Image 1 (tube, rainbow, N blue to C red):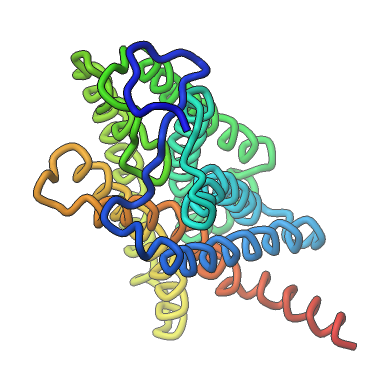
Image 2 (image 1 turned 180 degrees about the vertical axis):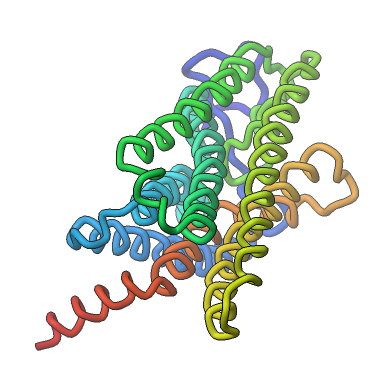
Length: 315
């Protein structure tokens, strides 16, 4: 293992991911729920992709966005969890600087992509509920493709400066990262220069993306709720509200832990370090695990296709 102190970081420099400081003795136990959530996320999201690809009747905007979300969740959880498990199981804590920056970029890039997809899905629900007769003419396949491309381009551009800013600083104090993965601010805090530019840019991206996306999602669901209360029957209101309520739960399960983790890393000095790191892992694992259940199993068309597939295999 390389020394813990360095004077000049290059591409070959090794960082040491510490895991969850203070909970090293129970890393093996913590790995059990982490591994279970990851396996559930992988199985659930691959199932969504398989069913939508297999069923031509599901080739509609809502399910295209759901597939985008599934791919995003797979990349997001896979960008960090395998390395985290290698720390817990094999004490494999070393990661070279370039790999660390790559992990950092993919993790934050796909977090922003996931936020953008939630906005796109809120737009789809708004059009489907508030303008049902125009849904097929507004959200055509080319429009869906353009929305997906715009989400990816926005994320790529906004997150691209982060690894370059992280590489820019001199690292001369320590190469121990008190974390399970290369979270942006956890890495740049190790620099011995003035990191205010990095910190300000991270704050800008977080508040710009979260603020803008939450605003559009809020506007969409406010209009959706108004439309729900205008439905003629109570049953129709409850059914539509139940669907939208589960979608809102998925959105909150993504934004609340992410914002909590982001803010406590910068301002929560009184929050226990191991708790901050656990929350940082939760927002990378829980949404990818929940999304296939909330958007997939609770969606009748996908649930019916899944049951048909299972019953066919059982015969």
